[in-house]
Image 1 (cartoon, rainbow, N blue to C red):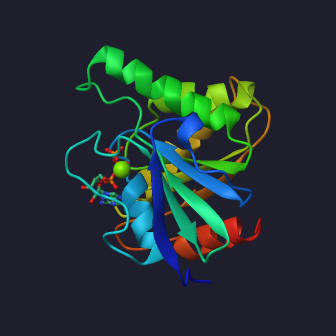
Image 2: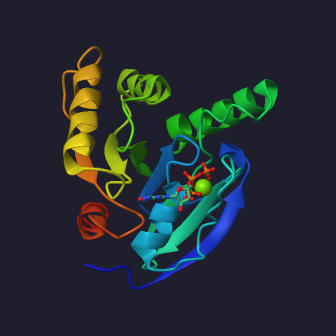
Length: 195
Ligand SMILES: Nc1nc2c(ncn2[C@@H]2O[C@H](COP(=O)(O)OP(=O)(O)OP(=O)(O)O)[C@@H](O)[C@H]2O)c(=O)[nH]1
Ligand SMILES: [Mg+2]
């Protein structure tokens, strides 16, 4: 199933300034440069919808997109960008955490993981926080086009293994590539299932 209609709605600095909504909402989050914005463009079929950058830390605001006039995708700033000043970085984290923990219409947090590299501590720490906070999330392994299939599978298994230290359950997982479109249909179907 494809997305027929997608439009940029608005940007917000923090939870307080997010638009009032009762529509189901899916927030895309992950390390800087993991491909959150690229993934949104791939899913919507609109290359320039979310801003993609070669410079990590590009997305600074909470960006809202209206999908098929029925649900929202939200592009969040990436976490763990070392070149952003520490004070500013912590501010980012606070604002993102407040949005995730406090947004009533948030249906599912879509955690984007780079499957082309081994598990990163910062991703595991974030996922652990979601588990402890009892926030509903899915894992989206991106960049499946980058490297051999065996290596990608090895990284995914290692991530799942590491998660066992703090979680009994197994979240929904998806393997995708924002670059070549792999897995996009399944991800859209999953989100549409809530709408
Ligand atoms: N090979 C490959 N490259 C990708 C994929 N997804 C994104 N990229 C590249 O990764 C870089 C970062 O992509 P963005 O979409 O800007 O990443 P982001 O997570 O939104 O980054 P921030 O907004 O800085 O947090 C770009 O150069 C993309 O072209 C993918 O699936 N495969
Ligand atoms: Mg981005």
